[in-house]
Image 1 (cartoon, rainbow, N blue to C red):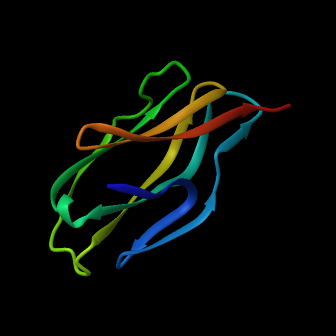
Image 2: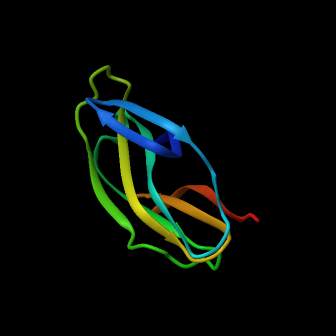
Amino acid sequence: MEIEIFTLADFAQDNNSKLTIVGTFDSINGKQFPIIHPACSVACRLRFAIKEGGDHSFKLRLIDVNGKETIQPIEGNIKIGNVPNGQFSSINIVINFNQLQFEKAGRYSFELYIDGDWKSGLPLFLNKVE
């Protein structure tokens, strides 16, 4: 399995296996904490080789500056069936968030797990500005 795309964006959508991503970012600025970010999306495009067909699980965690989960992990299943071109199959995962609350400034991270194994981390920096 390869990760082709793993990003945080203002908006993302999967439309018939076409992934639309608008406004990628990795930081949020705020004058005071806690702050609430109104809406964002995590977009992920995964590529599975023909030999990786079958059932897989995924989990997305949001970890705060202290290494603790800030939201309930998001989990799901992926079924990779017959590979149409005989070589690989791509799948998009889009997770939309509304009203995410961040308690304090610092480095947060979205962590992606496939079949229980950590695959990638996506940093998000919360900056206090005057």
